[in-house]
Image 1 (cartoon, one colour):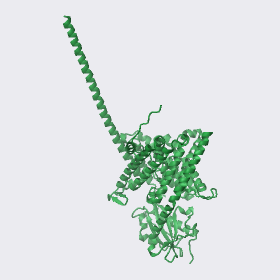
Image 2: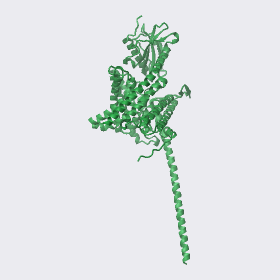
Image 3: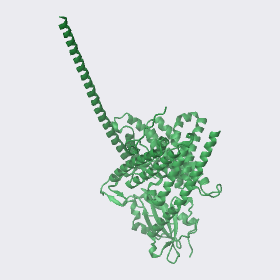
Image 4: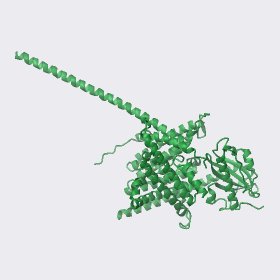
Length: 197
Length: 189
Length: 250
């Protein structure tokens, strides 16, 4: 339990997926300029990464690895291809499921779901789960808290960007450059979390 | 209906084609990749036990004992190897370990004498620890303190200000001890 | 009625990818490896060239199959093609350039979801000839490499004081701003670079607009002057006619 807590803390704060691992930057820059958009994307990412992390883990260890299900053939070399297909399919199914069972939720985050398929963060977390040799519970914790780190940062950042819109910034630096510089300050702050545990 | 059939056929053909090409690519590159890995292991073992003095790696290690590391070890232990001396007798067991330090991973080779369970050699072959702080652990005087200690009771000296590095090195020895005891690495002799 | 497609020369195609539509500085695509791999110039060039190879192959392949893929399922098919190409390149690098493979780490398989590749496949290769697609791939790949290298050059030089390239050490300073090779430095350097490039671009646009305005003003003034001259001439002529009439009538 102790180790799971440490893992949760580390993946949320110390090795924050945006400010330390640099995964999910494209969507981070594109969607963080309005608070409502940022929250929608953040929640969608949380759902997708947590579920995708678990599903891809299961696919790797029960379908791709030599097990009695597949007659002990080693298909792990198909890892990347299968993972991205699983993620794409999963996102489709998730979108349809949310549309059907919770229209409210769908109006909040449905439009962001298709974009998440090509978000580096999803495939990145799926591959990291395997690379780090996590057990299933570690996978759940890592996926959930890494994606929560994404949600927290993108939401906080949207406040900053909305305030920056009203600030007098030179024409050439408006928009993305100012956003990146603000992100660098946030990254500095998060750097201080290293060695906290 | 025709359209869906066409889709299904198209997708199946694509899947089969992709799997075949991937499999071929894998078969072509996997031997070279394994060879690279072997060379890397041999050259890092040579840091501790030079082949010039007749030391070699035991290529016939019992599988499922040293090479197929259980997942519970593999986050820290990258490999376990037997080193044979010039008479092809077991000379030492080398643990190739890595743990998260202050600035990236700390990679170390730790050699253990399987007959008396003592640490006989330590080298940090790759790390990014802070010079003069965490990096102090990689110096000869700190390594001296580790040599001779018995698995599983290895204690790492605390250097003030270098707690993150200490945690990494301590974790290495803890994982080595777990593996050593659970896999019964000790050799009577 | 479909408009006839404007043909673009290979040279223009490459230049477009390098400057006008540079993936890193103009399109702001493929940010994840841009920030993650640019701590050293060697790694940046390695990543850039890997993406270049992948782009050429995927653009060519997708342009090849664009007519037989049913449009409804084209995206999954494209993704599978890209994933296959990236996986093969991964294995090739692991076998023959293992140092680069280790240095690129997780960013190598993540080339699959690099927005540039799927973006170009969807936007260009699915609509153009194989030859054009290949050159587009070359242009974008070179542009990406240029972007990464510029960023890495700045970060490595100012962040560590020296640049290590293929065994040669260029420069060697004793002081450096080491935060530049850490994550905050990545964001900062990229933000400053894009900001500077945008400022220069806007400046140029303003100057070009000013010159254009000047030209228009001059042209209008000329036109007005011409018109005035014509009117003056007509007035003079009508005076002459009136005068003549007066004379003859007398």
